[in-house]
Length: 595
Image 1 (cartoon, rainbow, N blue to C red):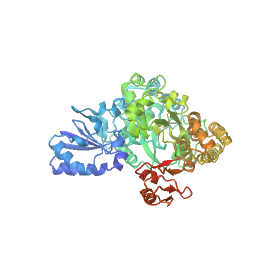
Image 2 (cartoon, rainbow, N blue to C red; image 1 turned 180 degrees about the horizontal axis):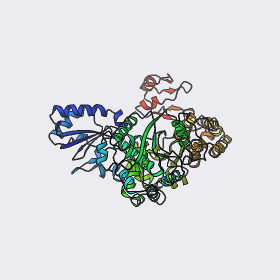
Image 3 (cartoon, one colour; image 1 turned 30 degrees about the vertical axis):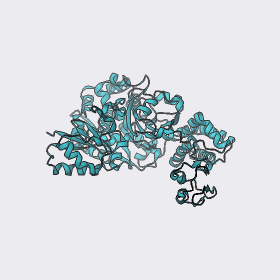
Image 4 (cartoon, rainbow, N blue to C red; image 1 turned 90 degrees about the horizontal axis):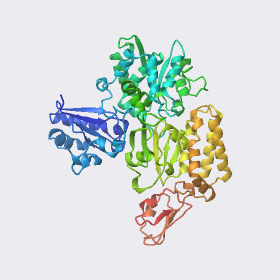
């Protein structure tokens, strides 16, 4: 029996910051101090507070160490683990109070969260099936196979109000019901782990921190619709998630929780992995299934829908990782428990990857209906450097920008659609007053153009024409007729593209036109970027009254564009200036500004 457990985050973020080296050094130091029989070191998944990684939590006192370095380990072991004295200087600031240390759950980042999909992330070792079982893992599968009929399972999901967390928000129970109703000699259960939105890492974190929850949920789905084979389609760029899935599948097979005659009930179900090569379009359900079949990942027309004719032409259900992560808890706690969270039409919680201009970047899970203000100002810690909130982008390339006027909107499926955005898979990128909304729209269009499969003309050609117009606008070369043409193209592409990628590609443009049209017009009419982002419309100027002639700017300029002598005001040759901003950054007297 260990007296202390040290949990170290082994998610991608903390791994990139050196957590494997920290774990190795920790084990060495614990052995050197003779504590190997008293202290256990456990590698976990993501704790959520990615901005402070690498993260380490010591139990039973739950001391939360942040931004830990390898050189900190000897002090933590000798002081905390050996002598019982917490190393206060390494604790997460918000847990330190005048009277001592407060619980992590009481900090601003965590206190408004409610973890359902993420309940085991950062809590268990994802590579040890016994730890998952110890938290109630596979109990839901046992309950389903021994106490419930397939119709009972589907009705529970219908009553819970669970909607797909991959972006579309289709009722999960209804999708399963449609697949069950279609008789076939073979059916399939698929998991979409091809998370491709810029800034999104929700599904990756679940797979890295709690892979067995997805396996269990897929087996439940197989029982509900009458399928005996599942596939997880995961992008190859997620090596940690892929490795932990492989380990989890082998462990589940060894425990007879996958394979033949599960729990001795006669139910057979197994799961295989398929790795995607990074094509964003393969996140679309029909393209994903086409890719699993070994063909080029291109969307197929619907109908027929996958529940009728999906993988290999057989009835198939496809849900994303977060959707599956909710299902075992719904089975164990009941539909009413899940439906008690959230709003009338959007039940439960939603996981968001919080990024951009915000203090607490990381992973959060909130009840549906939490306001954008609560997420950004309270959980996220607000905008850095005293800047003002300008907009938040949800839904990635398929979503839209939420302006400050909707800062208090409750986040759910219908509310976001009503203001021109969408839930999407859960990326939430925060922007401040220094961001140019035309440039933001252009960024997402560049991504969409690059990722279009090219199968249909509206998406293949239309998005490229949109990008050309946006580029003209950011260079100050467009006319108001171009703006009208851009808007017309948006609606044409939206209404005529084959799949969801093309149909939603215009959303970032439409939402920024709706709320920030003045910025577009400033670029066109005044040849000016209000945020000072678009380089073609910028010029750097030296205020002669403030310039002290220190020559630092001239020595910094990579293009040799700054002219002047020592102790005399300098000037910038606009013909040579590459507009890198290095001079303004280095100037100690605030003499250089953007115009």
